[in-house]
Image (tube, rainbow, N blue to C red; front, side, top):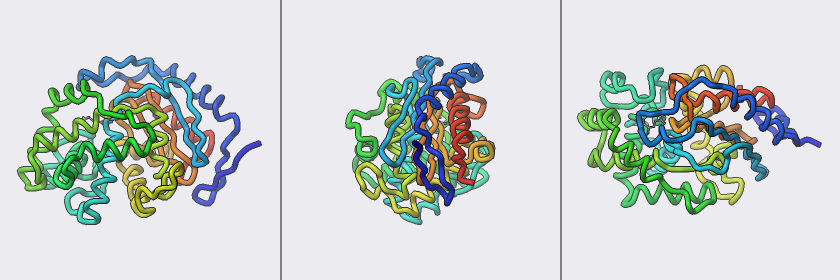
Length: 318
Ligand code: DON
């Protein structure tokens, strides 16, 4: 027996043998030896390159996982979605005066475009954009980290989720480029709070530790028109869920977003810890993890796993 789920008017085939399909995909991914574990944040370089995990959470509440799916890892830029959700809620449309919604076509930590465009980041998914969002959170919340932490714990239903203090510290000590982005934006008047406080929030958020199961559960609301399928709570409006998915489609995989849209066709976000989440509207979430990164800062194995699953099940939104 199989279950058909409707997405974009097309029935998606959700096979009963999903677990064995995931197992097969994970096995194939393990054979990929391309990529290098991020070492520009020294604490990240300590993670084994062999780690590999794949989880699918469907909107009916089923969570299917293979590999190291319970092992928390540094979610890094995937956390940009959490920050953005809170900033969109606090600032509404005024947020888009301070950060654009266009793909950058540049590496995630690029600085050149930021000066040309007078301190207005191209989008909230590159580092400059996420630092700007951190400024909004620090300026609007008396305790910005607690606001993010409690939202994340509620979304993934695990109240021990926290940031890894070693990763937080390591990034703070090697964060010269992010500091440069923040001070450049400050010089253009686009950072309101104290720059060091903003950077501390940003580094802390990047250091959140979660497993692929945590991530797949957390982002189910984005596949479900803004509503958490577990609790029934409306996390964002349907419109904001659509907007976040649009930003993930155009900018979530940085300067590889075009290739990801072409070969996979799903809104997705990566992090230099090796994780990627992909949203399948009206179906569920795919979360993958393996630390070695390609030249764009995206996990080589996680990309291959999501591509293989999306192609085999016909999940592209296009
Ligand atoms: O700021 C940084 O460079 C990291 N904390 C996050 C970058 C990141 O995850 C880019 N992702 N692929």
